[in-house]
Length: 402
Ligand code: ATP
Image (cartoon, rainbow, N blue to C red; front, side, top):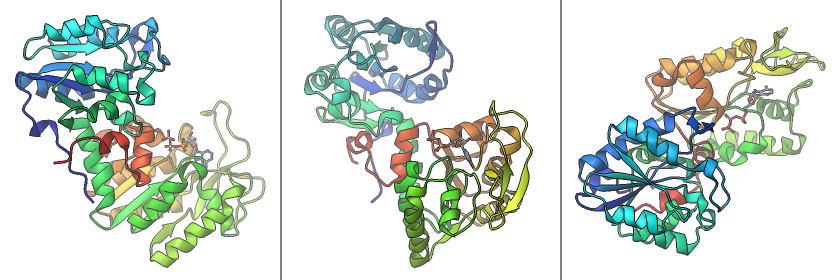
């Protein structure tokens, strides 16, 4: 069933107190923000709430203060930077209780169109346990709640799930809406042919993703380190390549499942192999390419080979929807990044809807300069994998249905 949530475009916040859960979990060094992408990404929703005349109360977690105030994890630097980015004061409601006397007084004094930022929600011990007291405190501050933090959507915490259950309207912001549209709805009801590409190091990390996508897609492509457990399950010599012997039966099951469902399952037909894993990871390597049924016992497959790159690119060409999670090889090494680059290029060149799961594949696509060629790059690692597993995300489920 399609997810159809009330969004910021469906609510009237004029004159109302709006609590907006953002993802301001930015890296900090000596009190300075070293990557402000998440702040920039949050601006459209915040600007919309300001323009509509809401009293905008922002909140977020930052790092893991484990339920007590830790000055080095205060959101104060975020308020200062947001003030510059918005060109309007974002008042910081310093308060060790997050919603204590100071924060309450600050909210009380707000005028329409003003913005304040609460202290790190994880200063409160209840936050990660979804404890009622803090959820009630948050709900008491607002008339309407907006959730725009996808990165924590796979967790049921006070500041996303608990508070949603205590307000009349819990809407989703623009960032959440985009993740729902692409990772939720496009994967559940894809325009076909739907090609799913999985890579990365370990089969074990993605058991449920493999199984779920096999059911949803028309073609499942498996590359990266995880492909070698599949190749071994088919009886191939895989040399010193990454393998998880405890998952050989699982791989056989998936191969049988693909056949039974009439789905195409594409595995590498050749590999770029080395004898010694590079140390440091980007050190020069001597690569030899072998076909999958001819790998010598002393080699390690560290990237898909050129024939595989072509095969995978060809499959992408005929697709209307493509989802990709996990690199095709050790992409941190320039010589072993070719397969990942080839797949990224194929996605960049197609007119299909292209969706990149969070984590390493998102980093690889951005690092290779293909970021703006994709329909959607997810901002949430764990949350995006759980969407691909077909799970219901508590932070999404808690939002009000249309
Ligand atoms: P995340 O879990 O953060 O979302 P991901 O799912 O994109 O990331 P991971 O499962 O973490 O990917 O795997 C990425 C790692 O796998 C990279 O560091 C890469 O070097 C490594 N990797 C990919 N292919 C191979 C291979 N054939 N042999 C060894 N390591 C590999």
